[in-house]
Image 1 (cartoon, rainbow over the protein chains, first blue to last red):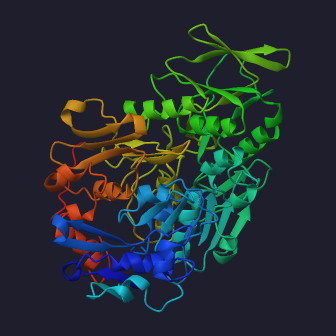
Image 2: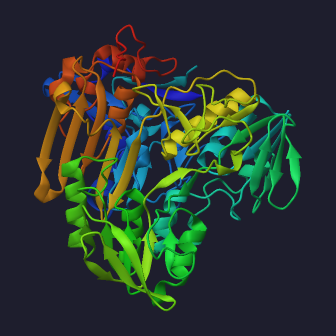
Image 3: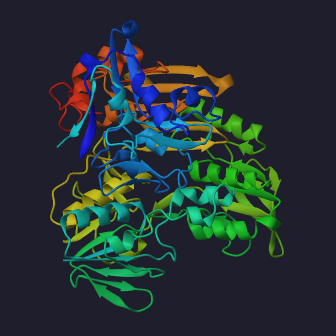
Length: 147
Length: 439
């Protein structure tokens, strides 16, 4: 399946992947509206980590694992692997127990504390290329077929 | 191949998926003593407390059994296994042959010998959907409940009853609640939160007698002599592997069904997975029962793979729990409370007032063995990855307690393997994630 890969050397630490992710999962899909006016701003599903004042940075994200630890740990069955390989969380079934947060070795499931629901990458079902990848100004994120 | 699975929870789900990923032709039959299809067992406290409805209970997608072509026998209890005849027998008198058998019957609640204990009246265990339903059905009549046991099940039952505005007292024999999964400071934080929400928590004491007035409970007497008035008692001491039906089968059962790293039992073509087993521990390799949800799933996956002729090795049980009590998140994993703390490296951060606590347990060589997180639990799984892959954390040890600890503190090699490979994704192999052992 296609996954998002992160090229650390090319990451400039701009966080545009996070902005694009938040925008894509907002109601308006408009960055200004999403950040300034929407009552509940989505939580970014990718995370830019930085060190040494931004000298080193990398955007980390969900691997959509073949054997997802999050799925194995999920007590409600909210996390399921789809036929196309995407690992998705059904927020209607999620009870916010954070077992997925405990289990994911990639740190790729976020806690939406306001909604008390797990939050994770869905590879942007409405787009051909995930929003984070499309937004990266230095091609530090690549969307391609893995093994 | 005729696969038969006894039990229908996390281990069964892992096994069914694993079998079907290899064997598309064989039959799969699931036999369960419960009347429901697989449900999120830990959700019963959410159901009791009214946080979810019955519609939220099913664990597997609606089409799961059809899609995986599973023949489902519900409300059917197995009371005998004959390995020589390769046949299982039911309490209703029927029997069924198998080619490969998976025993995934889970656990039974442990009921201690307490004076006045009865299977009548308002005494309940709390491990099944039926338990929660029974309790919920009488909840209008409950005004005061005593929960025996301050472990995960007991506290979740107490929270559920508290959410229904019942007055609840938890009685725990140890010096703190959650003594098996958490350490003292974490247990104290949780107990404080429970008390702040009106639950009475009594430690270092135990119920010695359930007092009756005719057919109703009037209260319990504690070892200390105290009497606590109540009308309902919840027994939540813990669970024991549900392996009683194997008596006389010749299958090796110690505390649980003994399995090897392919989840094979001592009998040919019989496998076991989940809470009913006694499998190897991740650290010590010693076999002991470990009733942990993700572990049950993983064991089921390994068992199913083996049953269908595939190759997979169980890497050992790693205890982990993620539980919220009154909006305080808690996660524990691995070794959290070593008996001999001096032979470990222990890092802690504590802000009790704000319900924040972090503890990291390392061995002297620098391998992460366990973690306790209370409050901010975000990205806790990074720790579980470091434990499972036996990564030596010495180079970034000073970063482990940082609230924003992440992959940026690890080596670039690890980051590349996990996120930048452009092929797959995997944790580095022992070349730079040296294996520990000998714990």
